[in-house]
Length: 414
Image (tube, rainbow, N blue to C red; front, top):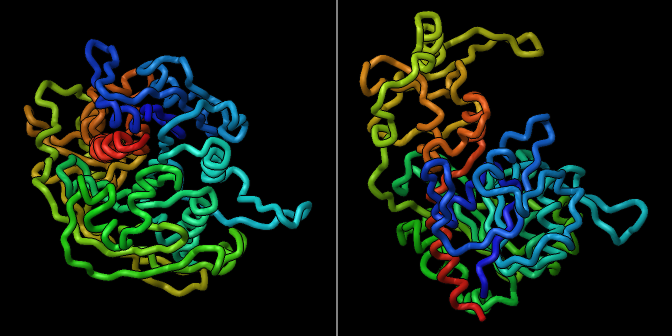
């Protein structure tokens, strides 16, 4: 089976960087992997300047790169592919019956999961790899697990089995404590599906499936849950929306609507610390904290107990504990947010290697935290936008490890 990939919500190309072990030499992109990316879509509706798309085409070229709303794309025109990848937002995935057609079902307008679902229906790629935030498993607050249940049922209706795992990159030798849900789906026509459909679901999590091969877990199981989301229980997605509620844990598998989800224990590897990514050369003075900004950071990072008043007039105290200031260089970075580089409590502040003065991380260091090549986003966008891109990005090294296992799986296909 050929290794052909399509990348949705591509951002600055994190999936492609990971799967193809990308390097940047003299501003030239070198792809060392085996994947042929035949189409990618990146469109940011909220901005006039498409910085992420511009970065993507600067690094990978304009050919087969799409910069339009994915809902406007004719899914039949997307090239056939072996693997569909993408990091999609956590949204409200609820569905409803259409008024015009009692048999029709529609999802919330603009919710990007339904674009993925449309591609699954039309193209039926053998394999799918997706990334999302860890709270996906517990959303929404009033009906825990419903949104992930809708996603699993959508995969089931399109003929797929699913494995998932919440991975904290910092626990597996990567330079950021970033927790994300990774979803691997495989169509019932694949050899991989056929090799697992008769296995015990628990064994897929602990020894047979894709994630345990690269991300070790203990044999001990803290908690587990079994769920049935098949048509025997829920007639369609509307019934899932209205009635489904379940406890999902940080690992799980679904085959033929039967779900086993387990709270697994990470077997951590040696930490990759901030000290290893800090630049050693002279840093531009604009990244250093001057008097007023330094005092502001001291306040933001410190403990607080602030009197406030509830809407009903009842007084209370808002409390925050102190954060490490500056950030500990002997630990992986905290989760990087899109606000990185701004004056905020979540922004990293480090001791400079040469001067020992406090400063912000540079955009290059933020790229290293996500394991992109140095200067990957240095494509004409501002520092603020470069920080934003890395706050939105995934940890490339995690995709690289998952990609190793996907390639092994594909080698066993026809």
